[in-house]
Image (tube, chains in turn brown, yellow):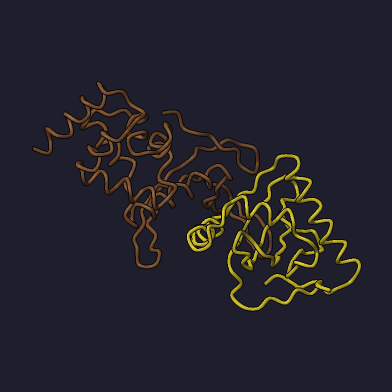
Amino acid sequence: METKKILTRDNSTTDELYALVEKEYKGIQLEYNEAFYLDYSVDENTGLINKETKEKYYTKNQMERNIKALKNAYHIAKGAASPSEIIDFRSKYNISASTFSLILGFSKNTISNIENEGITSLSSGRLIKMCLENKKVVYKYVQLCDAIDNLKKEEISKRLMEECT
Amino acid sequence: MMLELPNTAENITLIQDFLDETRRRIFEGVEITFTSKANSELQDLVLDFEIEIEDIEEAIENLTTENYYRGIDPSNSADFNVCAFCTKIGKSNVDIYLKYGLEVSGLQILLFSNHLPKYPMAQPFKI
């Protein structure tokens, strides 16, 4: 993957860097990867640039991604399904993201959005987690889903039930 | 320590110019850069009060001289003009301390601090 480039204060390009963040919040240990870049440090009281040392800075875009990752880590720590858990479940039972989304009663792109961008709602994330942990619930939702055809229902149900028996 | 400018017409104009320059840069498309400290503080605001980056931007854009708390070295000898304000922010309308700098020979808007005030903040230009 090509490294992202960031423009520093003196208009030279620098690489976007990544680091694992470990943060404790209200007794919960959160872990996620953050994006940042390095530039000369600035004294916040004097406003003077120190060209001897560099420190971490964050563009708006990096902040947006980091906050999304933070929220995702927080929701997972509070019991939501992680994107990788959803992907693993779908892969195991060969269900596409859009179909799984419809089975659970979301709009077509919801699961795909969650898998790519993380959990944005704790309540949805927890409900998905409960479904992933109880295939009989998913099986029931497959039977109740009007948005997929009967052949597909049968195929998915068979795969789910094979595991249950 | 940042100095507190006394409430004079000249100083109010100085802070107004700072705010006008901030808005001009944002209007021209300059985005706020966060220091490591501001990043860490915003994480707590996100989790505690559902504050978003847009809330910080909006708060900065809507600052007035009455929100002034400390700063700007009138000697203009630094690389950044740094100024601190106190304002309300987000859906929960919490008080927040904002400290940011405008790069003098460039366009960067650098956010140093965004956190709940640790003590009551006197705002010398408040009417």
